[in-house]
Image (tube, rainbow, N blue to C red; front, side, top):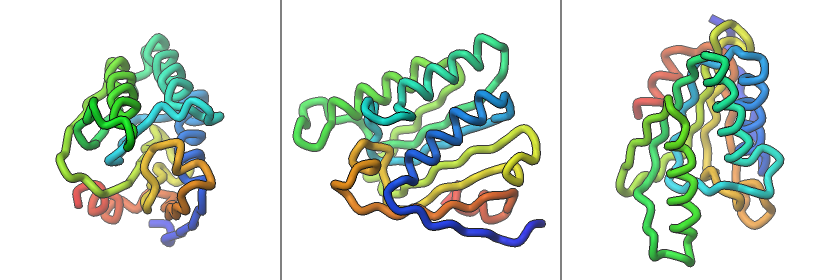
Length: 165
């Protein structure tokens, strides 16, 4: 097993995760993606927006490449305009449009963790991001101060512990 290598990202964690997804899909070597975020928004102004990720997933699906996507998030609150409840609902419905997706609704979810598993040993087989950032535009802006820790490589026991905590 490779030694544990951590990288701390300030402000670009969600962008980096989203870019890694798009890059992995273009290389055709992703096997699964997990998103654990209480709040998700389309992030339309981002270079790696939710729609760009979903377009890349759709292309992958048309090429008959199976990439499983699992999402854990809070239930959307449609009448909550102030905290972005409708944008959250829109994002969840957009994610559900991809055929190999499972969305799990978890009340009072607070954990923020994102994982990518590769079909080969690229990046050591996986990358896990965890920290304070929701998958929202605020996490990519200078509005919120977010920190993400990235764990590259195949650290199976650590990965499983974090994914099942």
